[in-house]
Each structure stands twice: as structure tokens, then as C-alpha cells.
Length: 194
Image 1 (cartoon, rainbow, N blue to C red):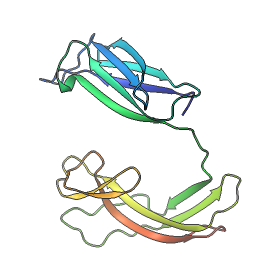
Image 2: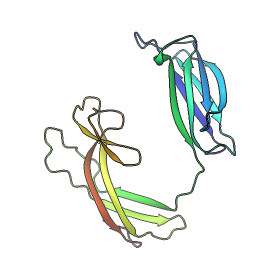
Image 3: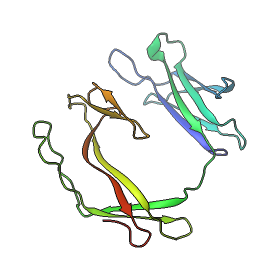
């Protein structure tokens, strides 16, 4: 959000053996949503191959998706450059808070070979406005676990917003196994829902 500091780290490694590159120059650049270069500077990697950048966000910045780029100075090829996006947005205080407690202390996920009955998860959900009054409405819940690199089956790719899209990908990244799901749970202003 405006006024905060965005912090970045770049790890430089040799492609052949993935060993850190100490004492290498990394060129950092930050661009605005309109493509204007806001910052360009060089930093040297430490003994672990890590270079750091702190980017102070202005108190009245251009809102939207900014880009940060790190490039190993003197190196060539796609592996020498990496770019990420980050969002600068005005912070809006949430209108209400949600509290979810589950009765189980742990959950054993079904294996891919045994896709039998899903585990039953029980608990309590409640919501209150920031000024303390209870919230009533409907809620939906999905319990997932992130897939590991050794999971090799087709799954649904779930985005950060919860939208599902078909994926033939394998574990890692944003691939998840849905363990349990429910929707339209009534939440009462007094006492929550079970």
C-alpha cells in the first residue's frame, strides 16, 4: 500500500551446478503500471548469491500492477533475467472478520489410489463487523492441500481468487487436491453456524 516499502531478493546461481554466485552485480529495475521506470540500481550478491532491493512506495503512487526486474550484469540468456509483478493498492479495512474453528486437530488426506469417502470435517464459523455486531449470511468452504512435486495426476488448478480451471499440471505451483467442500452454510448473527 502507499507509504510502505517493497522488498525484493534475487538469487544468482550457476546454471550448470546451481551453486550460488557470490560478488556478482545484479541490476534491479522497477516500473509503474504505465511502463515508466521508477527505479534502477545495482546491488552485489553476498556469499550466498543473494542481492537485495528495498523500494519505498510513494505516499501517492500510481495504483495498479508494477513490475520488478532483476538481471545478472554481464550474463546473457533468459536465465539471466527474471521479472515479477506486484500490486500497489489502497488498503481498505475489511468490513467484517471471519472466525473458523475446526474440531479436528489434524486431517488424514485420502491417497490418490483410495479416493473413497472424504473425511468429515466439523467446526464452528462466526463473523462480526469491525464494530462488534454479528454478521448473518451464507458461507462456502473448501479444504485443500497443496500438491507435492511427487503427485503426478491431473487436478484442478485453483487461482488465488478461488476460480478453478482445468489443468493437466503436476504438483507444486498452485495445484491443489480438494479434500472437502460445502456451500450455502447459513451463518446466524447470534452464535454463528456449525
